[in-house]
Image (tube, rainbow, N blue to C red; front, side, top):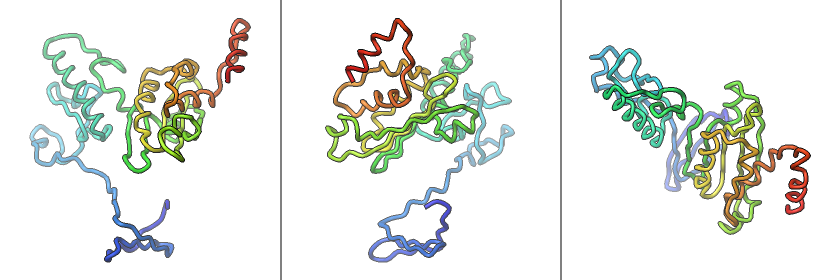
Length: 257
């Protein structure tokens, strides 16, 4: 229920009772409140080097704090991508570049270089471990539009692939692919359904490597697995029009389907 105020929360023997601003009552076993996060930087001496105690620590993509040649930060305190795996990724980049700079070696700090955490900006995987799971990577449709991309969205019911029926009876779930229409590459993926986190690494590779959707169609998934959704999404987007030399093969493909 979006834009709904919670006016009262009480607990009794049966659980938790919430009352909303529009007069509804909701009963639940427990209530989870997501109130955001603040950095634990209040007692580590930031003020002694001219930074604000208790604040987020800004860095460049090599994880170096602006204005310093020795101070680096990685993880949630940077407020870049507040996820464990992204913190580990940032730490790998920081460790490599610290060693390179100390040794006087060349620094690869162009986007997607060895010493930068480029993925923090538009290539972040995340999973909400609810039942069913919600797994996403890269940009949502709304975020892509905000960033100025011309996009096309393709949705597919995961339960329609043969592998879903093998995984579970009555499997229900949805996949969404967001495509950059200018470059014809995937910008983001979202999956909702049982165990969909296992589909996420393929999305990660497709986005980071900027695999064209036409080429992605040739990434054949094993049958029968839920990964067959990776066939249906490119098909939903549409295959390229065949050239004269390709036309017989396209007909054969169509006949096979």
